[in-house]
Length: 487
Image: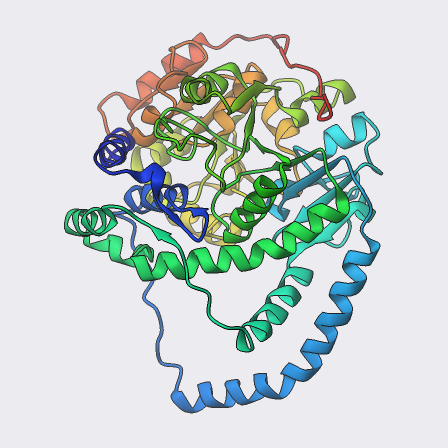
């Protein structure tokens, strides 16, 4: 299905069913369902790896025994660890939620591309905590402010499970009018929807987990007393849903800071036309975007609610680079932002022929969550007779994106959000995938953003026609100042 078809299908479901009334034990479930459904439909044609179920019953039994042996020690460690964690917390003006893949190497430390420019610019080192919700690097900017979420949240969850063993079951309030009909229709249309874990039973378990996890964040927020909590992507992690729920119940402002494309086909950010008479309690109250088009897309539905705000604050990392004068002068290199597609889909034959025969130098930049290694990419290129002298592979960590992108003559991608960042740097972009054409339709103007289909005749000639039109000199970069997060 195309992005446009997915959007149409989901919005039609919203019109037929009272999705804004669906709650389980006080948790709004429609945002969870909608976003899971969106990504399922996006990936309908993606091959999934087979699950190996060969782990023997004997091994499982031994594993269970080993876990039981370790439980008493783990409980004591959790009790002490959580006590110390909460005891050391201080009031802070802002809590930031981010991950290791939002960081890049900068002056010998790992630097959050979106939060750390604001922290450094406005000397907020002692006014914030940065909650890392996945992997934790050893050396980070403002290390003292980092809270490794799972170290303490896992301890909380262990104690919570122990508490459940001695607690009486609570009758759960389930408000899912017409949900059985919805689920039946969805399953008939897409049998794969049964793998989404959104049956009534599965949703009930999910809402129970969110409510249990909420307690950890409620205590965290009560201790730190933040004015606002800023997330780099509010969706995709159940723990973040629990954090949002806790913040809503405590009346703390929650903000989603743009981390990629937020166009009118991204169903986490567009056309939330059916709200309760209040905000959904697992979604943010405010959105901060990089550019005006992203803001306008969210504002189109947000203004109708009367309680969701949107601000175009600019891109902190680009603003930081501008102030530090770290941009490169333009050269003749092509900059290709890779993604999490298969190599065959991302680098089709016509593009490989172009790379091989163009006489140009190419920078191939890995995605932060790449599903292939640099060695696998090199092997693929070598197999397709792309000589190693005409390309350079960059990882997403050790070469800052603004530094690498600012020196490019042309940015090329399937549908990467780098289109937005290139535009702010006045670097033209060429989109070569149908999904990219849909996602960035509002940006394609045959001046700063182009689209070509590699499968169409004349692709190579059209590419060089674009190259001829590109400006020879460096252009002034129109980048805003580093946003002030406390305004």
